Image (cartoon, rainbow, N blue to C red; front, side, top):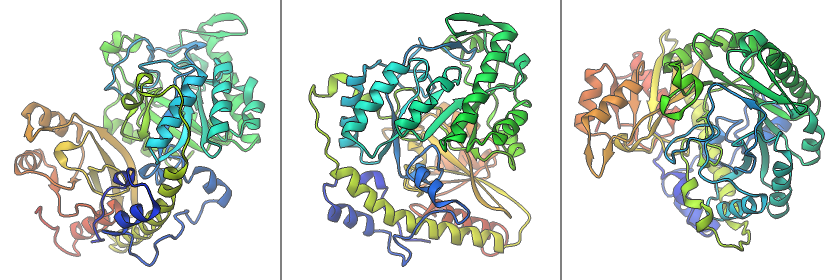
Length: 493
């Protein structure tokens, strides 16, 4: 096993490079490969430079870097049957949801406050709560104000694509090199089941005509972005019985038009949210149904599987949201940006991720060398840094990896309610966690008690903390080798 190391997020309070390095190297980062590049061998260097610190565009980067969304664009030009922007719960993660809307100047203050306290921050995104391209004046003003204070922050927008073609040239001028477009259909007939209306050129359209206009504008916007070298991520909501099988066609269309990533997300249809789909009983997909569709899409446009369907005011690493720490009433009227923390953090991460990349490659080689025919679905409790560093009872999500003769691949995540609160766990909560782990073979965590371990075993899921604080892929590689005959699986401590 590799040497244990604390989570990189605990380095944040350290004020100097020496302090951060002392913490980082006290338990890890000692390999001779430390500081080496984590760039995949088959990726163009220019593309890697664009995505290496972007947690949404790089699965590897999401272990280390944070994003924040500022809710400056409340107006929207389409209605989606899965959206209700009026509902808000601070504990939920769902696109379009915000606790407070911001002016561009308020957004600038908030970004500076976050950058000073969250050194992992690398990306500023505008994802609504309406549409960033439709509410363009506020989007543009926000980017201009923030860029003056923090010139190295990556700028990113999410849009439904209807107004996108009108602003592509301005996006280029502002050095926005990442754009996400939500595309749920390429057949307007299917679009009529998803979009009741659109508002375009000062007129409201409904039915087939609305879907046809939206489709044409989305394809045009995607083609324009590709022609200008802007990386695009396509978000698609998987709606069982509506567009689930059709997303195979969507994937083909967006790949042909140069999309960098395709992110297929599950429909969120809780009736409490008040959406049309939620109130009419349209269900969302089960975790294994989503995985099955994503597996069918392999070989098409490159898939993003680490999305967390973030709020429009999310702050922090993917899988966490620190937005409630940075509400306007907690931010001074005057804030000054201090780049020292972010700069120091990046230097430490450069060393750690090089070591991680080497460990990952060694683990992948181990899996391939076993020449086994089987596969393992592994759920990991982690707080970040690419390590198994979360207690089972404290986890609010599990990252899911699949080990097979092809290697070790991140395939998704499972959100759960925290089981252990103050040293005690509720049986009903544990039952919910076990249900969320459907299809999982093994759970890896930093620590687990006898009671949840026994309950998981009764459900056919093994759990072990024998690999606590190891790199995720290194642990899975050792687990896979043990599973298929090289050595016996280590038992929980």
